[in-house]
Image (cartoon, rainbow, N blue to C red):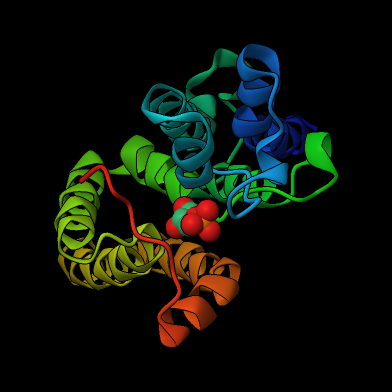
Length: 200
Ligand code: G3P
């Protein structure tokens, strides 16, 4: 029973559409009607500006981190499940949120939060890589896909060092989500029409 509550809590946590609620509450704007229409941090930066974008980035990262750390609660102490599993459920909630008609974000920030909660050095690695690729290409989508490959490569090394196959499987899964959710971005990158950020 506790396992079902844990997985449900992780999904509901990930389902919190921070971009939508923050936009509606403080800016009277539905970010789904503007920019790329995506319920994520990038589109919030684009539509509502830096302060709102940064807030959504932090909130979306926290959803993944908290989901991984839920197992530390005394209520879940007897639950025998790998912490990355509730993390992945939070990412599923972020992509398909029950609170926003199952149309959510593209898995990037919340996946980062999962890594932060599980193994912070890999989070630092992907964050630094993300910022470097973003500085060079000015494309958040491309940077997001590059870091999912970097994260997966790191998890292969991690597997050979520690024998922990979970990180490898889960990072592979999160990376697949990221590529799948960026299908339209991939088409735009190929066509040379993907928007570039101006603030970096
Ligand atoms: O994290 C999402 C980002 O990689 C792309 O978002 O709004 O440009 O489609 P967007």
